[in-house]
Image 1 (cartoon, rainbow over the protein chains, first blue to last red):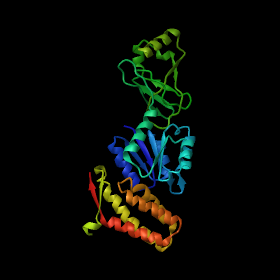
Image 2: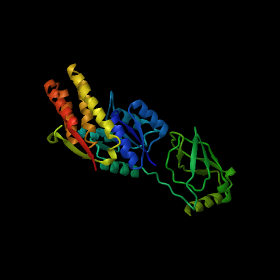
Image 3: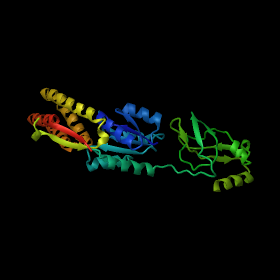
Image 4: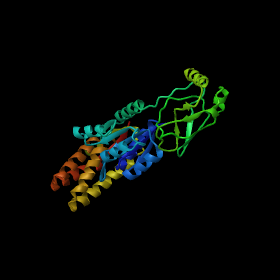
Length: 219
Length: 102
């Protein structure tokens, strides 16, 4: 289920979107203030943000700018919402990094189409091989523990610099790969505990092992 | 209310659960507007009008949204008499509103 963070100071709009998004199969996360919205953004890592342009004393554009300047948060797509649909405002939103603009009053079908389109454009590519499920990584601070590695995935998330990765490597060993010989690292940014796809780069392996990995990837 | 005054609006049945809260908040708007206009708090009236303009249409009440637009505009221009008329229109609308679900 895709989680969508809604930041709007109008409780009626929050109630409305809670209903519309839940009915459509999304997981709405509601917030009526900038502070609460940022807190939830950082701790819950939604797949998309619906952000009102006018949030009390703060403008949504200021918050949008803050999100887009944050290396951890800037990959999350934002759709701005507002009753103010002057071209200047729309252009400014897009220039600051919003993916789309939804005028108010909100028309559910139109909004849901915009959400679907934006999420599709931000779908993280992965591939699987053999019949194993995608690897998941539990994040404990900067340490990533990967269990049941069954495949090597396309890189989808940036990790913050080289991180230590522990492998429960039964499967890799069953493929004849000696993981003790390998150094494995990923690169990018992780924003919060959760499940991510990671790219594993194997270093310090001999050509024979590298060839074996290439064969596995190609299967 | 007489049958002639009824304002019958059909809205999406998915909104049935949240409609009572929306209408209750709209009645609160009336009280807030009356208080605000008596103290000439045009900033507050602007906020109320702006929110109504944005949320009423979403719930299926575009005419009410138009009242919100007018309230916001009148408040920005500080037109007290106009605001009083609009409050009356708002109150009339809510008093005579009949919501049907489709």
